[in-house]
Length: 280
Length: 280
Image (tube, rainbow over all chains, first blue to last red; front, side, top):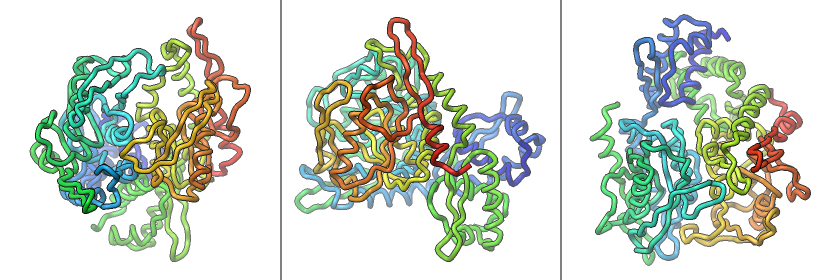
């Protein structure tokens, strides 16, 4: 369908946002709108400039016959910094305190606006890594994992505590929960992960890291690689953490049930991004 | 930041896509770009025309001082029809057959492209209803529920089979699974749902409808209303279905483990949309 520049800009913006990380040949757009490639190049220049100016992300152009354009979503350092403060305030609300010193996080993990922002931040943090699939543990990590995956344009696989008949044959491992020292089981459907996959592990909470290191061991069973580990909230000072190399957004410093007080600090996100990401 | 029309079109398209269903005052855009409201109106005209022409959705303008513009995502009848065929083919692949006649659906439910499309289709099907929240049952319905919720711009609440300490106090009900006739429990955190909420129930699979009718009963405990029920796949001919009024995308007609054959037809989606949705 023939479109003028103004219409093309709207449709191309939508198309690129729907296909993050994917390489789109210029000829695809040229055919789609019946336009010359030179006009498409100019359109992409405008979109790239606006994306960068408005903090939406960037466009990377790959030259040559097999080339095209790729939309890379990213969150700028300033925006991330401001949002981390907002997130920490959200988590520190005393009404989240549950008996036993647990925190109610269900509303945060069910909020599409939060998920969208946090997903884009993790996608930014791991934009320098090759990620084929995002992995998480049922149940609470699932929405977060999908939010991240939507910006990386990769599928999600879900590790469970029990096997289900609807998953077919599975691989299971036993692991020791780092904080409670109990032996637990985790299970992943055999056909859900290919050998050699590069896997980004995403979870909502990490204490001593038993679950996450269990997932790392499970990946070894599949001969898959850990591309990275992203955690929404890590818990207060742990003597022996089972996992070293991870990116966290928030860190619980102190949870006092008696004083109804939650102290939250930013995690290592900004530091990680500063050291690893050249973009922006 | 002052932006020319071309830049405004790109940024407004991104903004509207990020905020579906939300009413955005024209003055918001006018302030954002330092532009006259009349220019913003013209921009919105171009975006609306392109959105409709390209099957992205539509813009609805609300006049007056409290007015603004609202992006309503929708999938056209033609696009939905074509995608349903694709989806049925995907489901009918014999390699999905598991022992016992179960189907492996994990890859479909973990694929962001499928989820994005299916989520937009359900949002279209329930665009005439007031929906405050999407509800689903852990685990497999979660990604689907979030995909739908992202287009309706509402939160998701998750019903579980067991209560967790991290959910705080809960309401639980017992229900009889329609197909296996076993008594089961479902649990929802008390603070996850407000009285009077209008709830869209989304699930990946429905056999006799025991789980879904359980969720309907659970909503009654919260004095919440059922805004609608959306099911990805309903199973083969059931004598006594516990739920009547639902929208399904696909229907298993026959699953033969011996012949390794799966017969899949379209569900009632197109019929439902035709009867209820005037848009497009």
